[in-house]
Image 1 (tube, rainbow, N blue to C red):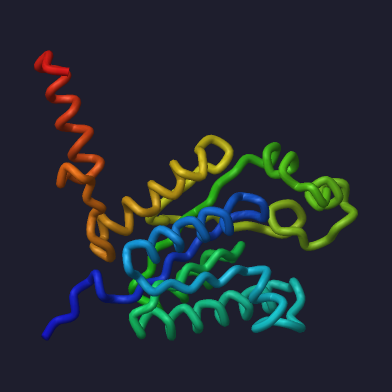
Image 2 (image 1 turned 180 degrees about the horizontal axis):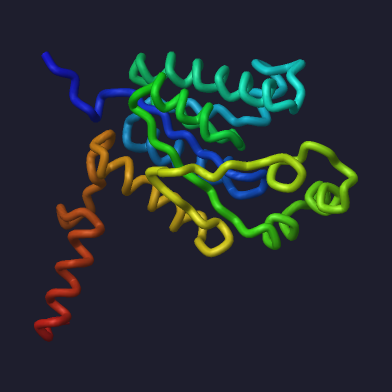
Length: 206
């Protein structure tokens, strides 16, 4: 018997600079997926650093090792029917592609945000210090961040609300068949309901 795609695990990999909204969106998406009956685990980059990758530094080699470790755990979870949501800067395209190949059921989300807004959001002032040369190897300033070449979803957290970003991600997961479209009371999906309402408006009924 072939396993339905809606029963399969998958990995949602959210990459972006520090402060771009990765963790916020990941947690909301995870909660929404749990409401739809999926088993979900969130792997936050900062938490992984303190536990699974404790002792690693910030050289390219150590950063790559950290991301490979997260990918290894995501693969274990995904192949056992769990949705793994990884929120990690993961600055290098080659290692993200390694994880995509390893995991298979892989959806990449690029959380984008302008540097001006990142600096505004940074209550610790780390971006300002990095821009002033006071912090070395700071991703996006003194260390490279390679933007995803072909992500499944791009969210712009400096232009969108959290809800808009989350809805983009959920829509893509639905489109790829990993969750059933959410039905409204009318029996239509929200998108179908909007089209019906627009049609009725065009006809002069609404």
